[in-house]
Image 1 (cartoon, rainbow, N blue to C red):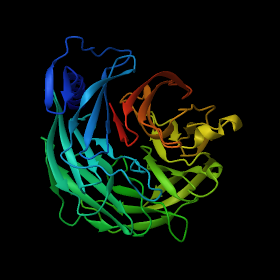
Image 2 (image 1 turned 90 degrees about the horizontal axis):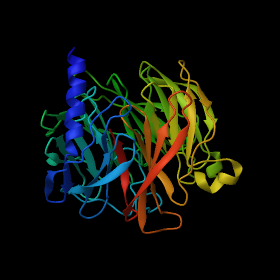
Image 3 (image 1 turned 90 degrees about the vertical axis):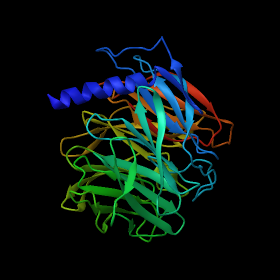
Length: 405
């Protein structure tokens, strides 16, 4: 009964956010045209960050049919960073810089990194809009990825030759308190790691170490019952330059291997089983196009990998988003044709809370252009196939990170 009440409370709270249009100065009067939840698809929200100076959270209302409507923006109190290693891109070149709290169905807190001011901002998502709740230092340089589990948040700092993690306790009002003893250096300070991700049970953190003598590794940090991480245990990856991470509920980790060299057609996706605090390889499949971002549907059956160069290989049958099946044993399989975000380069991605809709952030990076966009797709629950339902554009090509409800 408690879980049911918590779920409905969350639906009501997040649905009510968009009764107010969020603007830079705060929430505006309610919108009488608000859509209500229904059995076919609940209304909800999508969030991204401008990654500008100053930095803003951009807010989008998700209608019941999955399409998005811009609902303003709110300042993070910090700064983004528009020149980022290793390629000097205007985007953060990372996965997961915008994150909703993950305490069951409780999504009342939103977290955003400020890579230019080395802070993390938290927001309360409530009936009167999205409001800045706190901003705390990350005890490192260039924070670029976030992950949460219950009332614990971890951030990954990933500047050149300076990589670390830092944990926080999250209050009911979304305030952050640094966890004593939670700061650790990653195993390879020069690797410029791309993402940090809790497993579903909250017992370990995974960090993708992109570069290094072994062409990349995965750090596994054990986490105790108080949310305190321990020193990292290193597992070598089966593919070069691991980037995006997504866990199944059976402690299987999917990893996109971006292969950030001269051959983007050589990138792959791999799966691993967590045994103790070590990753055991399951299988690896091609995922051409500099594979970088991973999301898994709520039912654990389908994996979506987005890659910025995928659409350049469209004549060869490659895509901006590739689709895979996930077996009960964690083995990956191809699931048919993906989709393309032409002309923009696909970046981060997020699924709605019921996995009925996939959202893909895409920026004009190659060649450089003046806009970003969010491409919107409905998800076939039986086959995993994607159907395009719309696109919404934003000014500037620095937009980074994506979270959805």
